[in-house]
Length: 382
Image 1 (cartoon, rainbow, N blue to C red):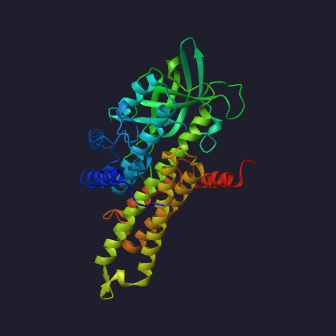
Image 2: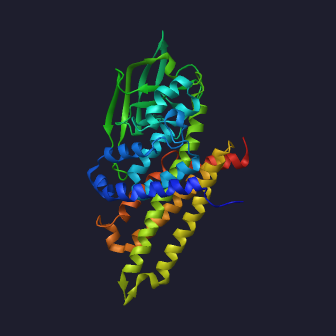
Image 3: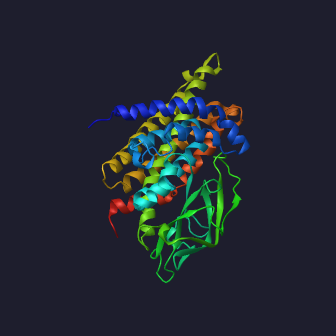
C-alpha cells in the first residue's frame, strides 16, 4: 500500500499551489467583499492548462488523473473558496457529463472549449421542488421535428450567469413515473428562450455567482441530447458521485487554510505572558482539526483513486464528502475560537473560511443525503 503521491501529482500540487498563492490568495477577500467573479484569474487558469485538467489532451485537456484534479481543487480552495467552487462546478458538473456520455462530435464541439478555459460550464439540475429529490424534475423537453423544446426553471445554479453551456436535466417522457423519463441535454446559453434570473445574495462563496435559469420555449438541436433518451437520472447520479470528490476536496482546502491560520496566530498571539500556542486548550483544538483533516484527505483521495482505477466509488465519495465537510467545519470553528474576537471581524480571513465552508455540507447532496447514500451502500439494495 503506497500513500505517496506520484511525481506528476506532486508537480501538479506545486504548480497549482504556487499559482493559487500568488494569483488567487491576494484577491480572495476582495472578490468576497465585492461579490465579484474573478474573470482575470480564470483566464490565467485556462492559460495554465488546469481548466480541463482531467480531460484527454485530444479534447484540450491535460490528461491528468482524478487524484490530480482533487489536489487542484484542494489547493485552489485553500486560497479562495469562491474560486474553488466555480472551478469544481465547471469541471465536475459542467464538463464531466459531456466527457462521460457525449458523442465524439459533442466532445469536440463542447468539451474542447471548456477544457481550454475558453468557456465556462454549469449543470442545470436543482429546481425549487427538486433539490435532494432530483427525480422530481419539472422542467420538460419535447421533441419537435429536429429540435428539443425546453420549458422550466432551475434554481441555485453555480456559474449560472457565466456559463456558455448548461447541462440541463429535463423530463423528456412526462408519462414516465418518478425518476424515469429524465434526460440530459446540452443547452447553449445564447439560444432564444434561455435567460438568467436572479443572482443569489449568499452567506459565503460570494465571488462565485449562483442564479436562477429560465427556459421558455427554448429550442436546441436534436443532437444535443447526451446519451440516450431516458438515461438522464442514472447519468446524474454518476456525475454527482464525481462531484462529491470535488466538494470533499474543496472542504479539505478550506479546512487546511483555517488550520494554517490557527497555527500561525496561536504562535504570534500572546496572553498571560506567553504564546497562546502554549495552552493545552488551544493545542487540543489544533490537534483535533489536524487529525480529522488528515483522515478526511485519505478518504477523498481514496475515492479519487478508485475512480481512476475504474472501480465503483459511490460509497467512498459520499464518505469523503461527508467527513471532509465536517472536518473542515471543525477546523474553521476552532480557528474562530482561537482568533477569539478578532476571528469575528473581517480583518482576518477565518470568518470567510467559516462562511465559505458551510456550503460543503449542502452542495452535491446534503450531509443527510450522504448518510443515506452510505447506509444504502453498506446495507445493500433494499
